[in-house]
Length: 323
Image (cartoon, rainbow, N blue to C red):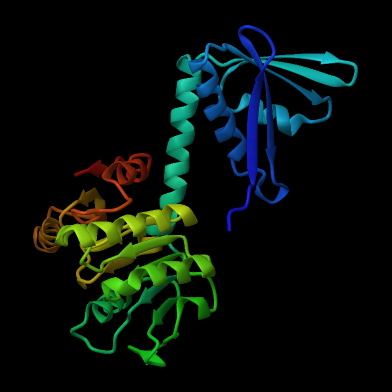
């Protein structure tokens, strides 16, 4: 079922001017949807030869005019009998491009917050067998000193490593900020549905068997991507080592290796788990090498990209170096 939560349109008012209109469902206002719609409409309008948008708002509709100002277009307003006419120059210039870049950077950082500073973590596929990846992921979280609640998910156990286990993500006591998924490949899509139903928005899929194994795996990975984007989630993986953060206030080892390097100023993102493992190990043995964050997205990474991780680490205080 598809629900329309926002809509926008423009209609020619003159040779170079079009009237623009936006509407956003009350429950989704204040989330930037109006600004995104306005940006996309402006891009389409410019391609069709328009240079200005025109709109009319009530005099007391300050919030609507703020939405119209947000993209950084040259903005003029003219009060007229209890209404305000607004004229926007929609041809891109340095100001609008700078505003667009800033908004995208802020949105990317916000979308990665649950990866690097989660308040709670679920491990889906947390086996009682110490040799299984799910058990090792849970072990790394516990030994790494994660300060928040950890929720093992295992339909065949009531307790794993001394922690209460839950039969499904849907039955967690709260929506976990981050889910580490280590279940058989054919069960991954169902777990994604469970996470969406429970409000879990950030996923690390360590499970292998996707694009790296051939056409069938590529098709399954494409379905995974479609689900992730359809639900508005973010994903690291599949077939990855995971991620870790050494920040003292949010220590996190969401990998299947119980090794955490000393806290430092270097952040690393690797497409290959082998390189990530090597650096992770070296950081513990080389006295001058410290780390702040490590992400291994997997060489067949479906949705997450190294550029997103760079965006997260670059603005952090302390002059972080990125490798």
